[in-house]
Image (cartoon, rainbow, N blue to C red; front, side, top):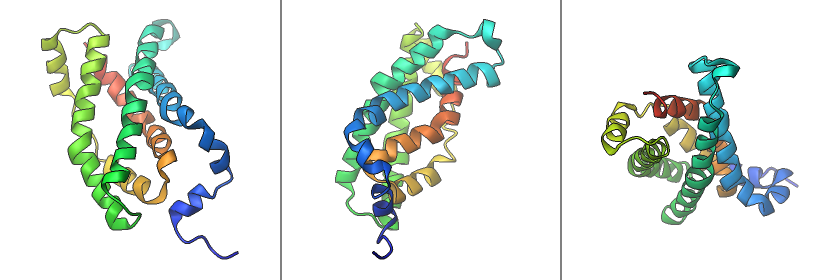
Length: 180
């Protein structure tokens, strides 16, 4: 057999491809929730330097719940919709998807995430709005990540790739979402 025709086919032909197909709930719900928790632990321990005694397990559980109930289902659904809206696997298609993702979806998603985090943390509407305005998009890494993701990675694995890269982003969001 000769070389694989496209990077996407190479990824889907990988040995884990057959195993992961039945486990899409793991990739689309459990993985984002767990990685939101990891991001919060990194935020509390490395950024805020709270130490083990100062660590808020409740805060980590809240961030995980947001990952399970909001981040995973919303991002997973968005990637499926995006694949239906923009057909193809070329580099041009990947760039189009990235632009739609970063310009159309990301600002709404980030605002919604911060609003949910504020509500979970019992912020008033005014406090929540002030916090949303303080969080910078800080998204300079995302365009490159998303072009590579849309070009090389099959739909079923995109959320997992994004969530792995997002550990740093999740740490930033957790830190910002939980600042007084």
